[in-house]
Structures are given as structure tokens and as C-alpha cells.
Image (tube, rainbow, N blue to C red; front, side):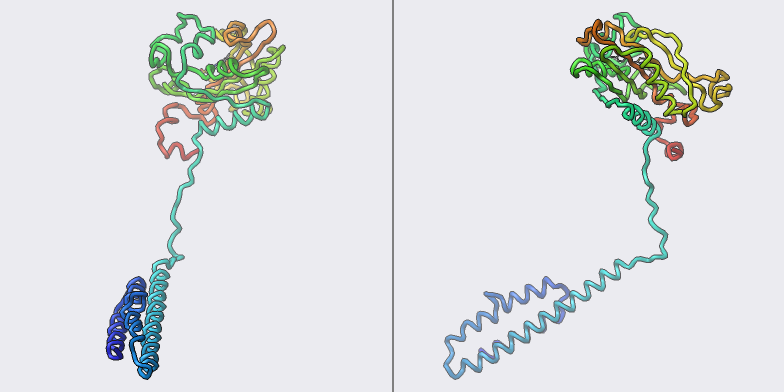
Length: 339
Ligand code: 2U9
């Protein structure tokens, strides 16, 4: 038994020498010193030895175990050190290396303008309403008092999905939904994408962005509409900006107006930006048509409202002097990185 033990010790110590992984050393420890280990099983035989032999064997057995455990632990330490050095070598940072260039993304110019305009109206007490881009004909046209034969309903102007659904041509259906479901008073803006069957050119895109606004309550006046929009343009284009309301006609507002602002490039002197006018048309607005209020379950005898709408792409092009709307949708980073 003693010899067997010493042979096993030699064999084990030899095996350990060439081992290169801690896992291998661990499985060797189990193989020899584990519950069913080869050395362990010999030691279990100790009981069969004579009383004189047992202490001798016991001494040998402990030497073998200690020698093995000693060699196993030092091998493990040695391998851990090698692993650590390998990692350190691998993780050496050459501080002379140029830093990895990582490009920080930034908001699309249209998103920047939507945020800027939204912040202004939220600051004026408006809340933001959103709605589906796929809309019903009821919310996009009928509720908005658009006559059945109104040109905007033509297939040539609107993307129809089927007899009831279309891609919204303006964000007004969001306000219609709001009026149908929310309590009065209502004070919301509705930013979002709109779709019109337009062949793309420098100023038209089949997909574009609008921000519309709606205020409905008791005794809401045209004066409040003018005051609200006057404050808005001063915050967006500068305190010296003035507004001009020109009569216009929309099916969903009565009276209606197109709203001009003093050119923010020439302060009204006249320049290439405002084609010498000194004024730039920025948005449309008006008092909500009583039919629209009625269509949304609101009694126009008791309540009134005003609404406005602006083309965000147009304002973005004016503000950044972009002469072709297609640049905003072509995702050319040389263009987008300018903003
Ligand atoms: C409801 C009632 C009335 C929204 C309005 C305009 C005037 C307007 C244009 C701006 C640029 C469309 O993208 S554009 O060509 N919009 O001039 N929009 S009043 O009127 C509403 C909306 C909702 C319930």
C-alpha cells in the first residue's frame, strides 16, 4: 500500500507539472484527493492495517496528501498569475494611440424646430396631443367641414388606404379626436407627420410635418388668437418680430387668416428671403367653424375656439435658409451634420 501510495504521488506530481489550466489541476485534485479519489480510496483501506502499520501508513498518507495539495495549490497560483499577466498584457492601453472617434448623434433639423415650437406653446399652457397617421375620412375631412367635393379629398391629393381610411393630410384629426373625447376647455398643439399626394420638388414632399393648435372654451376670441400667435412668433423669431393677418378661407375655420411675420433676415426691409416683401407667410389660422364644433359634439352657441396650423418643414427651410425640402429627407450626413 505504501508503495502504491508513493507511486500515485509521483504520477500525480508529474501530471501537475505540465498542466496549463486551473480546471485541469482541479480535476486532477478530484481524481486523486476527491471523495472517490485514487489516494482517498487507498486511505479508506487503512482500517484493514495492523495497529503497528497504521501510524506508519498514516504518516506516509499525510505526507503524500500534503505534498499533493501543496503542489496543486502552488500550480493553481502559478496559473492564476500567468492568466493575470496575459490579461494585463492584453489590456495594455497604448496612451499614445489616438482616441476612438465616436460621432455623437444629434437631432434632425425638423425635430429641432418641432421641439423649439412645442416648448414655446407648452410654456404658454398648451398640452401636446398626438394621434394616428392612418386616419378615418370622418376625422380627416367630414368632421372638419370639408365639402364632399372639396379638391383636397381627390385621389390626386390624398393617399387613400380604402373607402374609410387614408393617410392624414394634416394633424387636424388629432384635434377632432381631442374635442370628441376630452372635457372643455381644450388647449392643445398637435405636432406630427402628414401626407399629401404631391410629386416631390424643392418645396413639396409627399410626407411633411405640421404643428397645429386648438383652443376651445367659453368666449374664446379672435383677439386671443392674434395675441397667442403674436407671442409665439416673437419667441421663435425674436421680440421685434411683428405679425400681419390677411383674410383667407379654410373649410374648418371662419373667419380664417394667413399669418405673415416680418422677415427675420432683413427685419422687413426686403431681401431675397422675403422676395423683397419684408413679410414671410408662416402659418394659417382662424376661429373654429361652428359646423366643426357641432361635428365634435360641442355646442357653438355656448363655446367657441381658435385654431392654427404651420408647416414645420417650411419654417425649418426659412430658419436655416435651406432651398430644397428634399435635402431634409435624403439623409445625407454632410447636410445633416450642419445642424
Ligand atoms: C380643428 C379645427 C380647425 C387648423 C388650421 C391652418 C389654419 C393652416 C396650413 C399650415 C401650413 C397647412 O401645412 S400647411 O400647408 N394650415 O393654415 N390649419 S387653421 O385648423 C383646425 C384644426 C382642427 C378641429
